[in-house]
Amino acid sequence: MEIIQVEPQSLHSPVTQFMNSHFFSTVKPKHLSFISSASKLKPFCTTTSSLDSKLVRGVPRERIVRPYAKVADVAQLKEDWLDSLTNPFPRRAQPSTQTNAVSNWVLGIDPDISGALALLKTDESGCPAQVFDSPCLKVTVGKRIRKRLDAKSIVQLLNGFDAPIGTVAYLEQSIPYPKDGKQGWWAGGFGYGLWIGILVASGFSVVPVPSFTWKNEFKLSGGSYTKDDSRRTASILFPSLSSLLKRKKDHGRAEALLIAAYGKGMSIEATSSCILEELP
Image 1 (cartoon, one colour):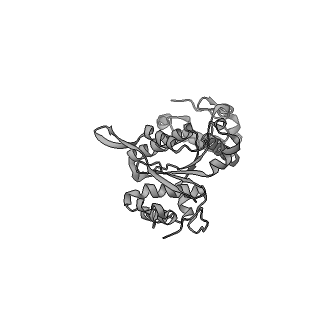
Image 2 (image 1 turned 45 degrees about the horizontal axis):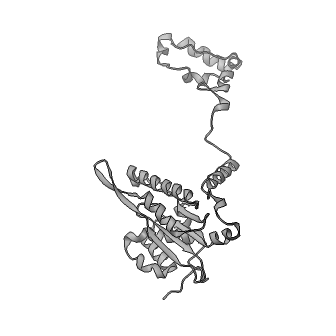
Image 3 (image 1 turned 90 degrees about the vertical axis):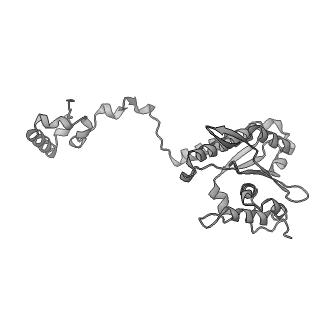
């Protein structure tokens, strides 16, 4: 049996004295065998040992990392995270042209296997938009064949744009859902991390965007909205690309376009020629 220590301070209270004396006078030693640790008798102690106040399971308190943070700490952590996703090669661009060039380019990316990449760039002709399906290849996972993002082809696609160093890429933030299952969680995290690594290494600045953020901007949030609504909204914003959004499986293209449109500050009610193309 373990030795139960009672701090002298805990005996100062008359109530505690009565409870302790009554407990030990009525319970025989053989009845105490159910007690496996002194933690079961904590209600009988009114103070905490000075040793316990300095140690937590043998680890000094000053060495324990707490998972909770203040609001100011959370803001700083977010700022550090975004800074780690910015263009790591600022000296490659010429200062005289860098600012204007970067502001005219925006990428929107749906990082899923069925996702896509959209490119918006403003020039004299307006706001031409392009959309590309995410490059994929087939791999064996156990006894099954699954699709995975093709890292080499993604790099070649990005290099083909010849985009200014520091161009901002808005990337939909991967959030796992219970219905996706383990394979869905793994594939979502893999695609999200792969896009971040390739974009930053290629000189882009990445801005993660939760899906509900850009969907709220285009009034697509809520259980009543489907991926067909995303295709419809993208067709209104970019009528010249509507022929590429006709099939149900083209929802990845539509969402990439809407993510880029969100990054560009576009809205369905806008009337500027740089924001909405003329409907036929």
